[in-house]
Length: 163
Image 1 (tube, rainbow, N blue to C red):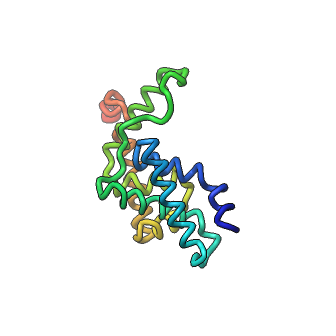
Image 2: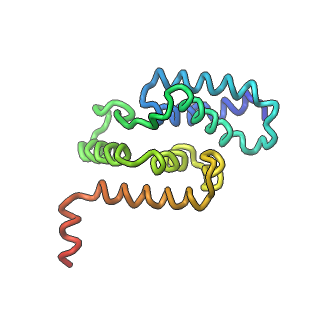
Image 3: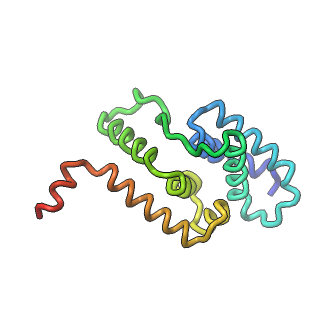
């Protein structure tokens, strides 16, 4: 696989991840552009061409943190135009989910984004985050549990104990 092939195969996913991290279209474009430049320079030294996707995501992640420091992912806008959503309940759920994800600490939100947006396995995420696979599985479980608690309507929480 050439670097150009890798870019064609993963450019959209890299942009989505950069946008998720930065929540700014222009900043995401800059992040991806710089990441691809760094990747192009280092591609010749990549030993495992089968791991090119995870390698590219790691470069995007590192470039984001290099550009903005350690402020972490921001979740201050929804993807797309809300007027495109036909069902108002979907908008409400999207807002609740955005707020819930925003409430998660970066240590939980980041592995969740890598799994959902990137489709990475726990082992791949562990390599990217420089941690263990068990730590990633724990963070993913905690993230899902926290999201479930955060988006569960208050009425449902009150009724659980009534049964």
